[in-house]
Length: 207
Image (cartoon, rainbow, N blue to C red):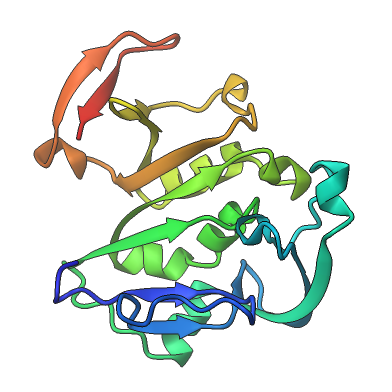
């Protein structure tokens, strides 16, 4: 890890603690687009990675019956940035944002609109059937980021596939990770090749 970097983690589950040697500061909040207190958070002690603000009713019955709910405090990245005085460096420094919150990725992004406007942020979020359970759409996240000046890329085994335009056929709820960065940012950082696509030519950025 770059010794100049700072890592902030957000984890509402009280029984989970991240390695303090790698994380500079950990906050016991769930993240969304609207702050709230005493909100239900659904956890499985057998599968911590599937815990969510949304009740995972479409999971296997053997999983669903073992889910329990706890009360947590929900905040937004914009609010915590102000309240906790998070140090993100200068406006020119890169800020990396990793979002894996089982269907609430779009809400976390919307709750970070000020940060996305102010900083040079890049990162990725998970997209899966958890979005369907949370009544979220990839289209809304794509349009939200596009409006703020960000481009989206599908992470593939051979590189980043640039999603130039959104179409309803992309709303598959099939597990994938979506990388995002300021438009044109990758042009000067990674090698790209043109590949044919169903609607127009796009680039594949080689990592």
